Amino acid sequence: MTALSARPDSAQNSERSLQDLVRDQRAFFATGKTKPLDYRLEQLNKLREAITARQDAIIQAAKEDLGRPEFEGYFEIGVTAELSYVLKRLKSWVKPQKASLPISQLPGSAWVQPEPLGCVLIIGPWNYPFQLVISPLIGAIAAGNCAIIKPSEIAPATSKVVAELISSTFEPNYVAVKEGGVETSQALLAEKFDHIFFTGGTRVGQIVMEAAAKQLTPVTLELGGKSPCIIDKDVNVKVAAKRIAWGKYLNAGQTCVAPDYLLVHSDIKTEFVEALRQVVSEFYGDDPLQSQDFSRLVSDRQFDRVASLIEGEEIVIGGQTDRNEKFVAPTLLNNVSWDAPVMQEEIFGPILPILEYQNVEEAIAQIAARPKPLALYLFSNSRSLQEKVLASTSSGGVCINDVFLHVAIWGMPFGGVGDSGIGAYHGKTSFDTFSHMKSILRKPFWLDIDWRYPPYAKKLDFFKKIVSLS
Image 1 (cartoon, one colour):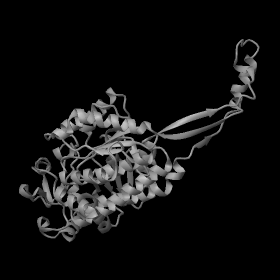
Image 2 (image 1 turned 90 degrees about the vertical axis):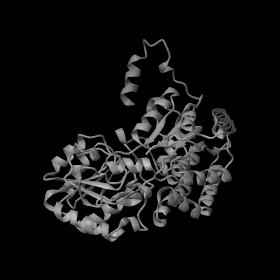
Image 3 (image 1 turned 90 degrees about the horizontal axis):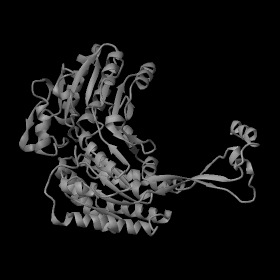
Image 4 (image 1 turned 120 degrees about the vertical axis):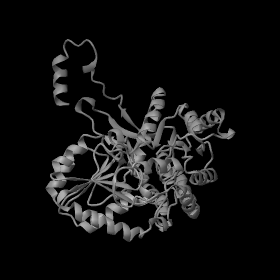
């Protein structure tokens, strides 16, 4: 997924207007109006009211952009749950946190004070085009920043809704939206921001990070990767198949934490494939093209890329495609080689390769030989196996005996590691991401022992004692 795909920009998104917007936001931030807690809470409440008032428009936009069924459209609205979580806790997050002092620093007091960064840029993706710009915006507002949002032009209906919602709710010198394609993105990245938050693919993430490095701008990169799913032989096969199929084929597989491939114990592979076949039929019927519960791929380009990954593979479920509908059926591939094209990149579509293993060390070795994924899934009742996999693998997050749902726990950070991302967000972590934790020490004048001042000759032994006690 990419937020920098080419599309001609309109005159209203000229480089000059971007410069003016950034300048105006910096001027507004300099007034200090964004910093008081009451102001932040007021703006977050306004955002929640604006989303609630536009629920139907948001869901309709997701349907237009991605063929999303109404049920899945509400995943975009689900960002209001995070809003409520933040509103209840922000008062405690903004408070200074006391720090203890060593003996050598007494008397005095020390604390850490969260402060906003300034003007931040949020570049959104097309797969969850509303939720994944509003979620980081919540953190930016909560931390006291100004923000510019660049929605994905590949989801134009949602981009329009985001632009209307933001312009109707906030003054542009506080929060603004810039719609457009690659030229707008490039112009934004040429400006100096205090933080850049990007959700998208690894290749474009590299472009964003390169541009940010020229400005010494910190970044949060929410990327993706091939999230593996290990299935042990002791699982409830039907329940595991249902959970995996739901998480994989949700939004037609266009989810950054979707299970990307299965590593199934050889003892239950045949049974598991049959369970998946039954579950897919239960979910989407014998002809998923006619299902009202299955999304479409976002563009012809994505259709062509995803459909090509099926070619030459052994199809055990699905495989049907329709370019006019941007439709690829829920598909399961059997006996896939590690060298196959489908195993060389994040699939980001409704194709699920299945590989088998006989001992978990094989599975772990294959996972460890590849870039670190955004998510790792393990289905097993064995606590020792769970601990072994947790200790032997590295991933952005882990979900045991389920998929996807760990990302909706606002009290936990969500982010990648290695190729799957830099930094994290959600809840308090979003607040921290868009804050600078300023360390402060305050000393009184009433006591000033001269142990630190020259000449040092007679003070060395005393200083050694202070160091040993600190």
